[in-house]
Image (cartoon, rainbow, N blue to C red):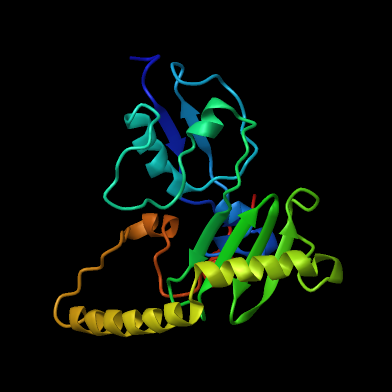
Length: 229
């Protein structure tokens, strides 16, 4: 079984740990977006490193393909993502699929979306100026290339890609309706004995957890750090 069992190792998301003065996730910068992805299957492919960026939504099509012996099963509906088997079997295989992500939760001012393709990251939100980074030349994402004449054609193509994938105005309407519904439910649950949905530690352990109403950065910078003696 050791040689004929597929093992996949990954994680949910990264964390900003002080980069740019930011903490936790909720952004599209590399520290918050990049996660490990390790696939082990001695009977199916040789060890290697894949440079092409892929997405967690590719895992389900990959597992379906593996379970089908590498074929294309007849599905009742289309799946998001693409099978990673071509990359697992040939690490240098062509991979034309962009990585797409979105942030729609936790009271954001407006929907924010990202497209990563061929080493370029484009971040778009109706409420904020666009961001364009060349991850090959600028892995720390310090130089915003959006608005530069030499990148105008690429930026326009990415804008069209965003418009084709997302209806941001409709998304925002849905988010605002959903938020009102959640506030109604929250007000109802506040009556009588309140039981929070998330973990709450007590006593001295409480400092190890954060699920408060303040902003992530406010909590991180206000948290007292003991001085070294």
